[in-house]
Image (cartoon, rainbow, N blue to C red; front, side, top):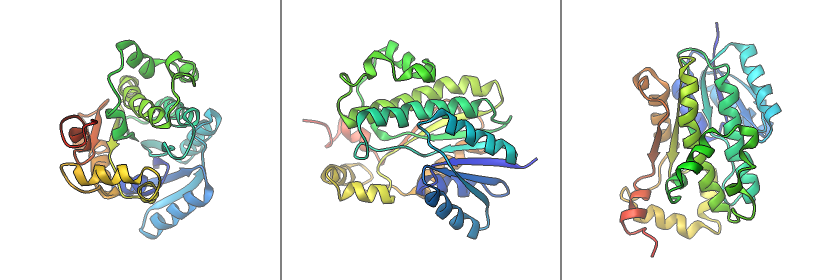
Length: 275
């Protein structure tokens, strides 16, 4: 039986993880834009991987379900890399919650229904989720366990409560890591694992746009004042992804790995602390 690794959002980080876990397997690359998926497929194919590409809109359950059906028609899904989403400068608060929070919940649910025994997944969250203030136990549980179709109806996620794009992004990414904790229990019943990685500033085309955009000064300040003193690379995220999806990470599930060069540490206890 062919083993399939599904990559949702095959940008720099998605590809970096896929290159470490996809050898000898069929890598299915899915993106909102076919040209992006095709470009990633060309790069990976020329590097010796067996790949195919397809479309997915992670804001739509039927589109995610169609991706699941395409993947299972190729073979058994043993790997999921979810690296798609929108950033605070790309969308409205409502759209960020719909894509990053709701979309991720549906992906975890749909792929959790078919993931093969011994399979593993990684969801790319963000350092931003770690800089959101503490939520109540009630809100934590709601983000983790509310049925996906009811998530966006939660009172604390309504437009009059979430008016800032950064706050919407932070809530979504905190929600992703909480959701993964809850889903790890269900995935475990299938003999599979799921974790999140929360990267800081990783140099990708999107990050370069942010660095030259309206938030650029804040980004450069984070890089300059964090303990490591630099931004990260997709390959560094790929290394952590490979650990979490491979046999050496077999005892790790339901966990979130913050890798931000110490930005969050400096935010709470160092020079990046809000005045």
